[in-house]
Image (tube, rainbow, N blue to C red; front, side, top):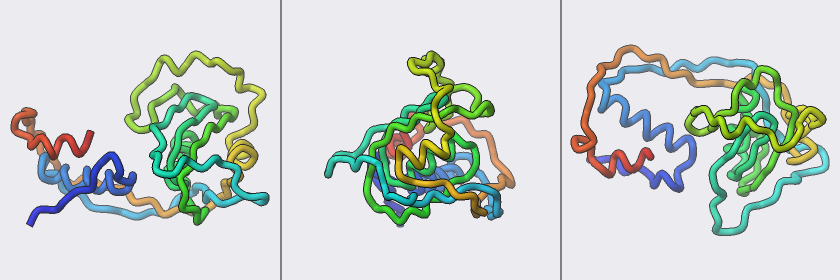
Length: 189
């Protein structure tokens, strides 16, 4: 029996990670186990005064994310928004809003000194074109204030359970693109 993977264009972040976890053992004889640890992070909740985010148009899936120091733009559900904020903070953020809608945001905040270079959130690649700032963010609020004032959400300190994958073994096996089933490859890109 063969498992059927969801369409990557509509898959959630969790579903995409599960697809990758299923592919890696087969292609690289990757053996791993999961470890859960409780770490310091933030809980994303609805702030007093309510949600200020713009809901996405019905039937329209928001596009990808754009980030640079001091700015996050894109759309998705609050789990995706929390994940994106997590990337900016570099600590875990758990979505505890209870919201089920899809939203579009443009969050402007003062970048933290430890934020480093601008990065493509989804692929972790350096994006030099994002380094030229068209706005001065030195007068912008902290990310915590910006989340509350601009999105109507709040980041509360919390202990977050994080699952880590511990690699036990892997075999380096090069395969050509012709050896890989095109549908299998297409589902991951």
